[in-house]
Length: 211
Image (cartoon, rainbow, N blue to C red):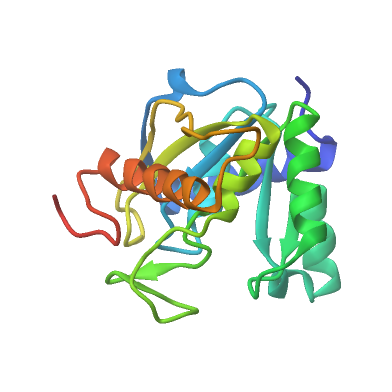
């Protein structure tokens, strides 16, 4: 596998150097990662999460990131994000184009990062919806429809400068479904289970409460 492009390689090493200085990471479970067609499913406690996860992966891992559309409203930032593999999603639901883009990335053999919670969660509460931490079914639906290997990922919550952050990759998760695409209940159960598995890697229940 090759990196997305030369610009991505430049950003990867420059931003990676700065990020490792500010937020050093202790990484576990890299040997569990599939090489292609994986859907990484981390808990989401900080805006640093996608950056830190992406930068601990190999430069040629070809990780696409589903990111909130607000980040793309600035033309320059939007151009940069697209060049490094990110694409926008409307968090209001029903964004068919983003789902198609996500599925195409996986079917091409690339990998995808998608947060099951859909928003940052602090003190157990979602930043956007104000609800207790929970998974949205979309992550499982995309995984089931594409045959992707769902990988739970734990990332420590609070990010403080120069404080080490744990990033733990879990064993690939295979949803249990009936039929080709599963029922709505099975899809939601799969999303709930992969999110619970992500938190459990860090010894936490969904929302960050210690087990």
